[in-house]
Length: 263
Image (cartoon, rainbow, N blue to C red):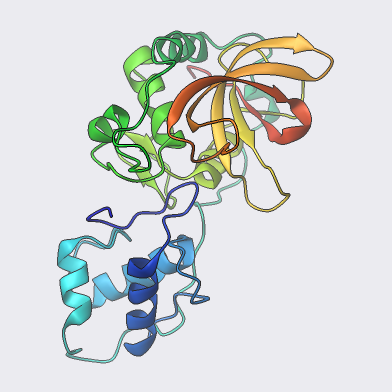
């Protein structure tokens, strides 16, 4: 089990999360449904608790926050109805900023991603990977961590830089796919569900709810199909499979694509 609880895609889940949710409710905060999943609503309640306890309000349930949750409250919480947003939502950038050609940054990230095909988390099922070690948040679902790594190492570019949202980490990138999608849209990098190009960021949505998974487009094959390089995937477990793989995907499986520009 990870020593810290973060907002990731897919969500971290289990008894430790449920215990945090129940404790937050007991202290008068609003973490949402008691479902054992650490999503943005839980993180927002944790942030409210952290502010009241004069802790760093980052929405991460780390050792200090977990210890504080066990203490007797010194005062009533400042906000009993903490609400969550997956990301900040300023007005989208003008469509004129969208790239019409290929993304050199994306292609550099793609080249980096290809070199890691076959890398698996160790031990199996642990969510521990060299990408999580680099990110500084290891042992958590890591598909978005992998994309962050490839853009930072391959293209010297930080995705979600300066963007406020669940799972956005300054200087590293993002752990949470909905935040990355919101950033792409707000920054004017969103090209939608169209014929993708190498280096595009693919935002996958398997069930029509929130986006579930992320990858980097390698090539468009025609007839709505494309290859993507993805972290934390496997045949039979698309979003948390533990390996970097080349996957055959369909445009119908994505919310859309992002094409990162330099300006």
